[in-house]
Image (cartoon, rainbow, N blue to C red; front, side, top):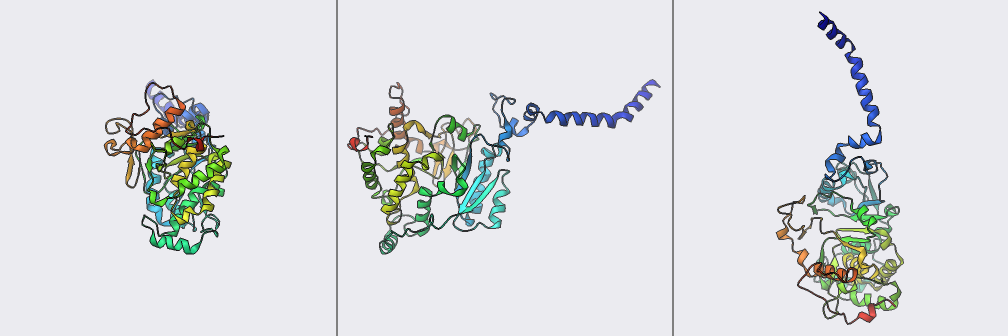
Length: 401
C-alpha cells in the first residue's frame, strides 16, 4: 500500500521534475565551458590531444568573429556552378564546416539567383557575391589592338585565342586583392571549380600562417609553358635593375634559376594559394604589377597570374615567409599532389603513387634553396632531389643594394 502511494506521488510530480531538469540543463548550457563541451561539431573535429574547454569555439560559428580576417575566394562564372558546388562540398567536409570562414565569389557579370542559391545550400558560412568593375576587366588602352589581334590569331598554346583568359590572368595578378569585398581581409584562400581536396584538416591554415609570420602558401610547383611567357623574365630583370631596393634580403630568387643562372620557369600553381594580402598590397608588389601591365605581356603574350605571383614571392619575400603545404592533398585537373604514405595511413584519401610533383624539379629546388637560406647549417638535406643549383651568373643583378 505504501509503495502504491509512493508511485502515485511520483507520477503526480513527474511533470514538475522534468521541467526542473530541463531548466537546469538549459541554464547550464549557457555557461561557456559547458556550451563548448556539448558542441558535437567541435568534439567530432578535435584531435585527442586537444582540450575542449580551452578552445573558444564561438569564434568559428557563422556569425562569430574569426581569429583571422580571412575568406575563401574565387573568380567564377555562372556556368561554373556544378564544379564550384563540388569544390565547396569537399572544402566544407574537410575543413570549413568546423570553421565557417566566409566565401567571396566575383564575376564579370551578375550572378544568377540559381547560382547564389546553389552555393548557399552547401554552407552555413556567409557567402558574398560581387561583380568586377570595367577597369579590372578590360584590354587596356595602351595595348596595340592590331598587334594583339595578330597574336591571338597565330598563338600556338592553350587559350591563345581568348580575350577572356588574358583578362582573367591580368585580373588575378593585379586586381582580385583590390576588390572591395576583400578590403577588410588579412588573408585569402583561393579556390576554383572542379578541384578536389583529399585530406581532413585538423588545424586552421590561416591561424597557422599568421602565427608563423608566413605570407605565401602553396602546394603545387611546376615549370611554366615557356611559349606563354617568352619575355616575362627579361621584363622582370629590367624591373629589378630599376628597383633593386624592393628586393628582400633573404629572398628565394635562386629557386627561379637553373644551374647556368637562366630562368627555369618554376612557379607555384596559384589555383591553390593561401596569402597574407599585405603582400599583394605592398608597394613592391603593386609597383611590379604596374610595370608588367604597362609592358603588355598579359595580352601580347599570355602571362599567367601563377608565374607573376611566384616571381614576386621569390623576389620580394624572405624565404622564411613562403610555405609549402605538403600536408594538403589536392587535385587540379591533370595534376595531383598527395602526402606521402597516404595510401596506408592518415586522414587523406589519395594515391601518393600517382603524385609526382613532390619529386619534381621545382618542388625539390624550392626545399633545397629555402633550407640553404633559412637553415644553412643543417646536417640533413630537406630533400635530396635530382636537381641542384649552382651560383647564378646574375647574382650581382639580384642582390639588394
